[in-house]
Amino acid sequence: MDDTFWINGVRAAGAFHLLTAVLAHFTPVPPGWDENLARLPDIHRRFAIAQNGFIGGVMVFAGLVSLFAARELVSGTALARLGCGGIALWWGGRLVVLPWLRVWPELRTRPLRAGFALLHAECAAFAMAYGWLALRPA
Image 1 (cartoon, rainbow, N blue to C red):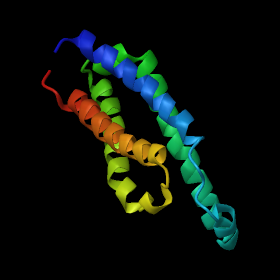
Image 2 (image 1 turned 90 degrees about the vertical axis):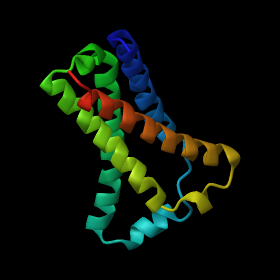
Image 3 (image 1 turned 30 degrees about the vertical axis):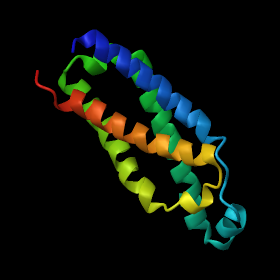
Image 4 (image 1 turned 90 degrees about the horizontal axis):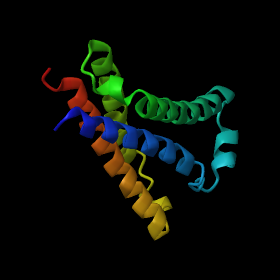
């Protein structure tokens, strides 16, 4: 595959990063979220809130880099490989963590279940595609 395919693919992935971050704001909060957080010590509550912020921040950052620096990410330079490797590891790690969260019982509608399945697919696709860009032969 030529670089044009990969550049367009990385740009599309950038748009999907941003779309995922936006859609995260419309997912329902688990029942009792505020009450459960209120029972935690302040430090644990701050960690939970900060973690959500960092997840969104990484998605937005990776999306913007993918949209506006796609050519550079595909270039194969050491810095491009490092960036693609970081994005691949992040999405691969997210793919591993999602089942551990055990949220399926809370996903009571078909759209929520479909969205969560699509999130798994997105994680896998991004981990593989950016991983390939990080490791492909020069």
